[in-house]
Amino acid sequence: MKRVELVAIGRIIRSEGKDGTLKIRLYQKSLREPFFKKIYLESEGELRDYEVESFRIVRNSPFLRLKGVNSLEEAEALRGREILVRPEDFPALESGLYYDFQLLGCLVETVAGRELGPVVELITVGQASLLVVEVGGKKIEIPLVEAICRRIDPAAGKIVIDPPEGLLELNEV
Image (cartoon, rainbow, N blue to C red; front, side, top):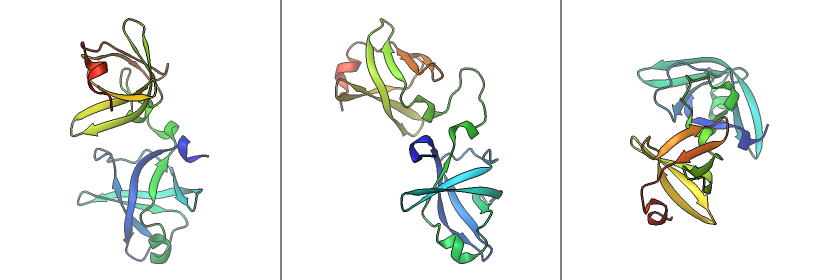
């Protein structure tokens, strides 16, 4: 397993107690039930998998127990590590819904059939999201809104947009 094949869902903040419990911060606040049975942590360029023993939320703070991490010292050694999971471990979504990470790499083209380039980044500020698309060596930002993004098909790796006049020239990064 390579790091680029995994999705970051949070970070280990610190140990909690003497039994190896980890206090974590999840990137997506809406995650209340764990969907992952196994996580990956990176150390010195190497990925190691851990089986999840338990996940609980106490006073809006998530806590994680991993098999094989049974002491304060073992837990403290994991402090600051990013929590990674396999994309295929995410639960299936209803038709027309997708996870943000599924948009990375999708080819963006206009409704007129002009290929622009791949999505290389997704920027989220508050409730608004922007697709960062690499077009001819430059990067442009496209609002991720229904009025512009007419068809989003992560399974096919394609996003069809209908940009308002001047959008593609306006926001070169």
